[in-house]
Image (cartoon, rainbow, N blue to C red; front, side, top):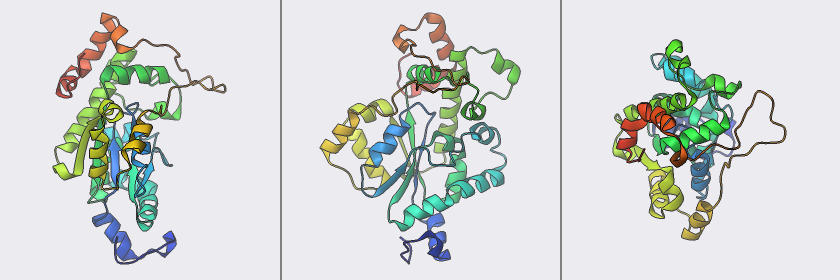
Length: 281
């Protein structure tokens, strides 16, 4: 990697920095959130060549909605990403590893990431919209009063947004996020984008193999992958010290048990992409 080896960040020369921006291939995982991003980060971290992060700080959790609605201000978004990630990516490079990040908050910075890191790769991970909405409802998305919720994407028209029920809001989030990613993917060659369903990564033996190959890192053994697939990663839980502004729901029905009104709310916003992704609603 580059023409020099460094063990300390503050020793890195300009030639290596330029190589990072122009030739290094960090991997960024794009998703709605609640779609197995922590699972994928852990899975890829099984490779000794990967340095895989789920939500490194700064997480940029307050700025997803800003980035979503300000794609016309790339200079600002570029400064935010460079300030938040340049040093961390560079540290990974000089360790002779591949930087991988699955932070959902970077999704709407994807075009900026591609502009900064010219040789970057992207993984689009998809989850059934009903399962995503159920998971997000249980976590209190678009209900709680928190830094995360302040940063969640929402429709620009506040009047229309406020009329949506909870399921419809989250179905809109699923659709708007995946449409943003699809539009971004259209400008990438096939060597720089890998699309997968979380359902396949957790049950299929070949899809994880394809994922490691795409990321360009050495593959772990079959037994290591199989063992990891059986683990529960980022399992839903309600802690004993949850603050009053964080409301989580213990019980919410599986998608198959929703009533027709709830399924219709989901379908209005998600049916087109669900058909593309071959999900049954």
